[in-house]
Image 1 (spheres, rainbow, N blue to C red):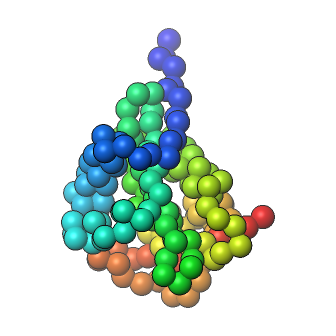
Image 2 (image 1 turned 60 degrees about the vertical axis):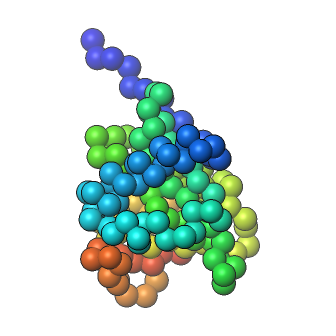
Length: 147
């Protein structure tokens, strides 16, 4: 008999201990796996962003954040799920949590890795413009169409 699949839970976070977990996940996924330079990952916006942490059972396994830009647009970014936990709906739960919290009536966008464009399209995002390079990774700007 297979062990039960742990429940995935997502929380908006604000404690130092939780931020340590966020930065550890981002370091493992963005900096080590995707080779994003640390100075790009730690872009100076963490203090104004709203951060989320996903747990599989008791283990932190994913993170994401959103913020309002100087142009008054809502930007979703820094989605990172540990490799061993991908394909379990964690990215969807992070995205759903963020989309339920963001302010309405403002343009909401993200910069998607080319490989995950179909995922975001399934969740109401549309590609805008041409793909472009961000830290050596091809990205596509995607805008959310509110329902």
